[in-house]
Image (tube, rainbow, N blue to C red):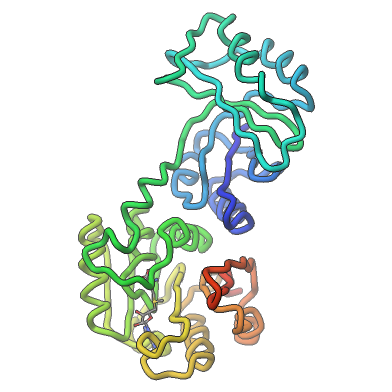
Length: 331
Ligand SMILES: C[S@@+](CC[C@H](N)C(=O)[O-])C[C@H]1O[C@@H](n2cnc3c(N)ncnc32)[C@H](O)[C@@H]1O
């Protein structure tokens, strides 16, 4: 069994991102306790879990219990696979129902009794305790360092536009499509979504109606070492004219309504036409992840065209921008 801690700002989207990766890897979420997921999967899932954007960490689940005493009793029976030195570190989630103040010390003593040395400043192995409805302990295998994503935020890129999504969110959109080979962003802007897809080794295809964006996105992709790309100047409402192929996956973040980014079009009409055009170039069974402001009913429009809605996630960006991220499938 594995455990995985998702991030708290888009929790449903984060959980579905994990679910999508487990569908590719062959595994499943067994239970959820606030941000803590218990996962039935083995090490073959690691390469898929390593793709995640909205995750904090994952590891090997060792013990779960309903009380501190039960946790310690069970921990005594376990052979702890500690490498080098260790430290116990507790995550007290917002729904924590137990008194865990003393737990790191007590659990540390149990593991120490098996012959392992504590090192509080630079441990080789981190033993994690999660407190929610229940108590869990496990060994951290992978931490998703925020710095890895921060360095790709808009203002760190050679071609800067403030319109970009956070790299973690872009990564999640890519993963929600379950892309394995390739991904198209038909309104790529500065290329933030394509960067996240390209870093996963996917072949990326991008379109934008403005030449400066096509050049800027290429600059950004190359800056982050991505070489397997096809970028075109063109209209996202006429994708069939741009490509003589269908796509496994599409992810995009259309403009929200400033005149510059809408290129003179009426917003809702543009959204409808883009959805229709994407439908035409998507493979059967292919997925689309897309953002729309809440004032546009993306679900109704997509379903009218023939898409099936798999997910919808709300995000308030600021006072005048609230949006939904949607995941659709072409049946
Ligand atoms: C919100 S931005 C995309 C931001 C992008 N996800 C990023 O990370 O940089 C939307 C982009 O859609 C482009 N756009 C607007 N209308 C378009 C159309 N009809 N076809 C293609 N691109 C279009 C705009 O030029 C703009 O660059």
